[in-house]
Image: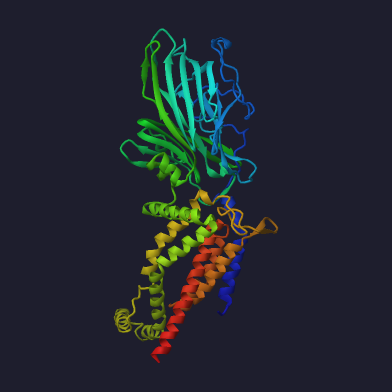
Length: 566
């Protein structure tokens, strides 16, 4: 390849953009690299509930039972230690006085610094903690903790509190029960009228918990953030709303089968046996110069009235954990839609590819090798289509001298030129679109594969070769520059080199300027994809390598066929 001044100028421009691209993206807010929100940040909830008591040590355990006469019914109950229940996957930190889950620690997932677990529902953000019971308007006050008891296996918990308000000054007993199973939990609420008069409950809400954007939760750098309110209506329709949507779009009250909130990798979902009215809340957290939303979803209970001593119960189940298809399908077959891997029909294709990737990992026990195998399988499936496209482009390259002569001869008669070109194509058996159509057929699959690898929580913090995290760039060193450190990412550099080699080997037709632009394409891709997650660059590198091998085989076969013909 001849490097004339145009190519060298293009390379210089690409290098300049490469150095300044990362700071520019951060300045413009095109990428998210937000640390998890610190506990001292304040948030104005959209709805107020029982004031949360002061926090205690998260490792402490509440007393198993508090007798009724140990608390004065006329005053709010003092703060009590958290009650921790959990299993191999998560830990609930429950506040016995507020009757909610203050936070949910995911034991198998760490933050970006790997010095602590990923925490969902910190109760510092959109509303009350998960599973809170509160009125949509006004407040209820806990005046007595009657029972606070967890099971011997530490997986279930029973809480009975006595609440008062202007609507029931003599008291209302609320019983809450949690039972954990993996990332799912069975949850029930029972209301018992403790007074000697009828009590009307008009606007009680059960919170499903809140969730912030993934960058806030984990501290990870995120190229394409996904943060949504998700719900499945009673009519069987799935809908989702962006976390930063306008109030008129965000605050809606449809009847739903389940509702939840999700970010790039995790979700919190509240499901019930009977459809319920969607409740949602949102508040904004100031992080630096940004104001980022935290959103919550839950159930607004239908109004009911209790006679003296009467009991009314509601049953729910929840999912609080990673967006893993098998886990979500086991929880509720329709909740897999919160994956948000891609859009339209490609989302189904991306979920299929993710399922295949997981199956490869079950055999190979390595997501790195699974990505390589999945890429090879996809490329093998499209081998005939790609081969046909390459052959068509080769034919187009061979007739270029004749096309050039026709353009020169009939440059003043475009209509006749088109006629002569069509005659030439028919004579030589060339389809001018033969190189494009097969490639267009592959694009949806490759976009779906891209979306699969970008949105798979299974790849997060998984090491492969020198890559410490397949969901992050494979940075091995940094070169200190004047205003920032330039990371060295070997996979994306290898990807660019192979892309340039492939571009050089691919038959090209057209004018010289078009060829120059195509040769500059790898440099342009390097700039925009330099911080791409290593799982994606691994896929792209293997794909480029496969293309080079395929071109070499086709060229060798073509030479043998030409030698045989002679």
